[in-house]
Image (cartoon, rainbow, N blue to C red; front, side, top):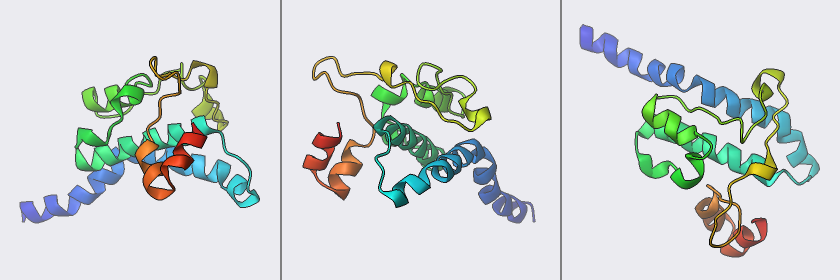
Length: 142
């Protein structure tokens, strides 16, 4: 009886624990999906930020740290928060204060971390872009 109750609660536990990340992804999608339909260019920093939140959500479901792009996500505090506290934190270096409460997501492009050797922005979506599109697509998007 007790095991049956626990097994029924486990799926709900994932929904409750991941609600902040899922809600953020839904808000981003609702705010920017019309731009995709119009064929407009979406800010690459927003795409990378979304990728980081998706990776944090993936980590929440799998507990596999391989999905975290630590080099970038540690600087955003997302992976640090999720590993140490169980929920991602977001540094105000990456996102304007009160962005989430106002519904107007403002990402600070000027403070995006850069690879010191290659002098290009750090990304978390490189492999996804290479697999989905091509290496050339990723090189152009950077």
